[in-house]
Image (cartoon, rainbow, N blue to C red):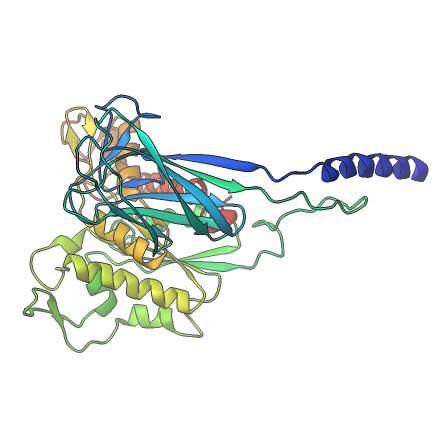
Length: 420
C-alpha cells in the first residue's frame, strides 16, 4: 500500500510540475449588471432604450450624487481594470467621481454617445482591497449620471503556487470549525427590526428572527427600538421637540443613550470581529421633532456609528429601510426615503450596503401580494403583515430576515461565512 501511495504521489507531482512550469498569469473578467442586487441605482431600472445587457439599466436621477453603486469582489489586493458600459444621448458630458470604498480614485467624463441606444465602454484603473469592494459612480453635475448598463472588472490571476508534496487536504475555516471564533451581530433600528413588545405577537421585527439563519458561533443582540429615528435611537431621551436654526432637532444634553453607551463599552460592547447592522430611515422623515432628521444629519450619524464600530474592530453594514406594502396595480413598489442618503454614507465610509428596500418589495412581488383588497387580517398578506401595511407578523419577519441573510451571501459580505 505504501508503495502505491508513493507512486501516486510522484505522478501527481509530475503533473503539477508540468502545470507550474507552463503557468502564465491570465486575466479574469467579471460582469456586474446595474439592475441586479447588490448593485444600487439611485433612480430607476429601465429597459426603454435597446442595446443593453441583461434585463435593464440604471437611469439615475438627474441630481448631483445620484449614484450607481456596485459591490465587486477581488481575489487579492491590487490594481484592476474597470470597464463601465454606458449611454449618454445628449451632447453634454455627464462627469462623475469614481469612488472605491469611499475614496475618490478617479473621474470619468461619460461623454455623449450620440443616442440613448448607443452604448460604449470607458475604462480606468482602480486599486482594490482583497475581498468585497464598493465602487460608486457619483455624478458631479445636476444632469446626473449617464445611463449605466454594467461594470466589468478585470484582474490578473496570480501564478499557481508550487504544490506541497502529498499534502493532506485542508479545509477553510467555517462556522463549524473550532478555528472560527464566536462573534456577536449587533442590530440597531426601529420597529421593523425590533423584538416584539412583552405580551404581544405583532409587530415582530426581522431582527427577532435573524439568529436562526446562523450557526452557534453567532450571538445576535437586537438593540432596535420601535418608533426611533437614528437620532432618537442614539440620543434617547435627550432629543427635544425644539428645532435649531438649521431645522434640526436640538439635543440637550448631548449624551448618548444608555443602549449605545453599552455597545461602546470596552467590556460589554462591540469587539473585534463583531458586526453592526444598521437600518433606519422610516421614522426619520417625520417633519417634527424629536424624530425628524435632515438628509445631511442622517448621513453624519450613520458615519458616527460606522466609525465607532470600526474603532473597536467591528464591521458595520448599512441597510436601506425595509419597504411597506404599496401596490401600483399588480406590482409592489418602493415607498421609503433616505435611500440616497444611506448609499452616500456607505460610499463615504467604505461600508457595504444591503438594499433591503428593493429586496423587500421584490419579495412582495414574488409572493404576489399585489393587487390586494387592503385586508391585512387574512390570507397571505394577513399572514405576513400585522393589521397595517408596514409591520410584520412572525412569519413575515422570518422571510425578511431570510432576505437579509441571502444578501450577506450574495454580496459576499464576510459575515456570510457564519450562515448555516
